[in-house]
Length: 177
Image 1 (tube, rainbow, N blue to C red):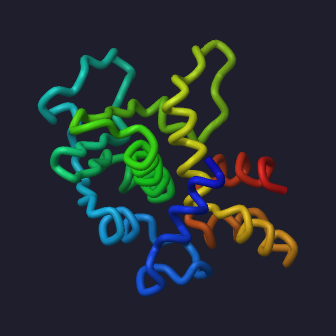
Image 2 (cartoon, helix red, strand yellow; image 1 turned 120 degrees about the vertical axis):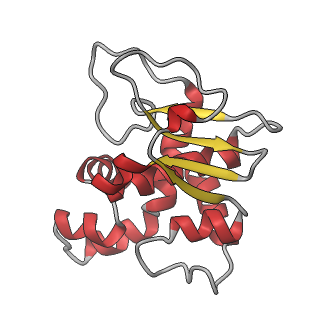
């Protein structure tokens, strides 16, 4: 996933992202580079074809390749902007890695994982793990993480600079440092 995300970032035109400035403009990358409209929706379950959800489940995002759209949970995005960025990166991961034809891809909140999974939960499907790893590598490029780490940046400054949640940044730092 690291190499794939690096190739995607390297393919982004310099007028869109210079490869250095942070945070990575994930919505611009999805929109201007991949042609995917980012739409914030308060009730993703109203989207035709959404699978049945259990009482405690919600949707964080979905990819509608036939419409060229990524839809994100509006309430979640307003409350946690860093989570919204991760969801967009996750759905873009599905677009780059798993999209087959025009079939929509639905991501329940527990699948767009920024946090440690509880031991009693079943493992995520491989496609969800891959989309999470892709999103982390896209939003927090390893070379930029390492560069800022060497400068002695504190953890909260890391989160702010990269536009990431503490949970996502913690996992990313453990992976690349």
